Image 1 (cartoon, helix red, strand yellow):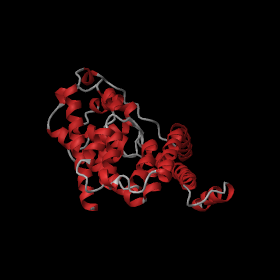
Image 2 (tube, rainbow, N blue to C red):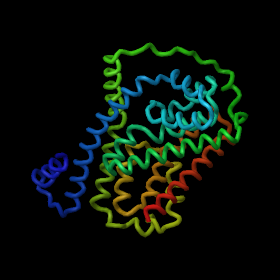
Image 3 (cartoon, rainbow, N blue to C red):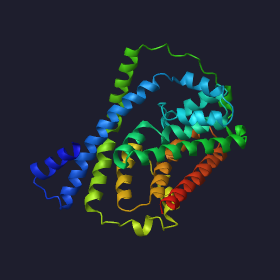
Image 4 (cartoon, helix red, strand yellow):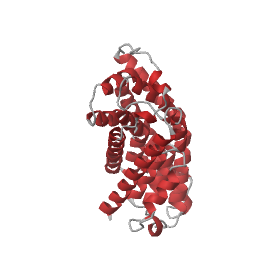
Length: 316
């Protein structure tokens, strides 16, 4: 139905030719914009209902009672449905350490939360299909688990700023919510998220639509296809300083994939942008010493490169 509507607007109302570059670009833009906003509204609402059961205090209590690896797995999974991003990395980190959550488990959460979230899931599902969305979610969780386990095994607690261990945060557990309150909370969160990401979605899809209509077919195969050994480290190096969120980067990545960029290279690029963003590293410097930030970035870089090469090899 959405594709039929996009075709009607593009080719009937605007009378553009299906074979024209402008027609192809506009048709892509209308269809994907409608599809993404509908999926965002529905899935963010459902995820927010789940999220209403996990206050920061409750999340900390759950994780502080788990042993290594079990805690890493649980932390990575909780990162999918908890509303923490790079802007809240410092208070979340302090709260977890103060509550006795192991350092490695804390890092599993910090990796998973910005990289694997409902916006990424919705946009990947809408543009790539559920299989690639599932692959990204699974690999993101695995990267978070592996990164957290390695950091935990290295015993790097001495590289956390000393003042963090001296902070005592309150244990004010949120009062139990009624279902009506949960529905209201979920709806308000849908509105809040859409207000914050709608412009990124529009810009991202517009850029993607332009590339879809005007970029030469297969122009990336030569440089970023499965046979290009340097493609994965190149996109990771580009992605680290490039700050964006899922709403802005996924529509562009979708077209890069369509034009011939290998799947593993696509996954590596997305992970580097969302999990290794320079702004988050600057924020984390408030609670972590430079050496620990360097180790954190190094571990993530190696695991992301591995994911990229692995999927390029599998899909070759």
